[in-house]
Image (cartoon, rainbow, N blue to C red; front, side, top):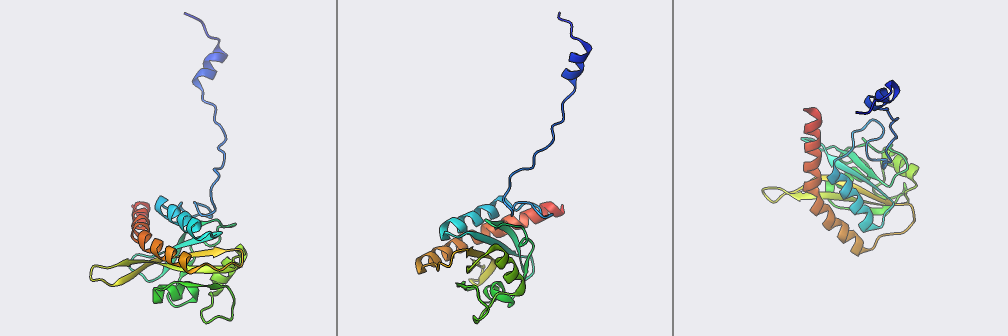
Length: 194
């Protein structure tokens, strides 16, 4: 049996505490005091970004038993300032999409019929978004009625408009992802409350 020195013994039994390194995260994944979004939301935001060739995606989910949608996931942004943004029905571009359940696409200017709200303008302006598509996440209810479960702000920093084919593809994606995104957010909320 080999003998260990007291120093070797102490080093063997003591764990060295390593300083934790901050994880490299996207701005939308748990910064600014917000819990990280569910995996389904992150995947949906990445899919919208990839499909549309966009620079920025903000994913807003309608609150349970409310008409207000709140931005829960952001992808490709420079700051986390958009997290927690509440989108009221009828206010700004996102509010118009929540009310009408139809997509909105256009250049961000103040002289259009539907203009961004002050909060939307601030966040999108800070990110340098020049062209925006607000896509509703739609489901069909039990009786066949269309329900808006949330919306995706898809923006580009370049002044390039999307084709009709890209818009149709994003609409299909919004319909496919709506229920999954809504359910993932509700489960996340319930776990957090419990």
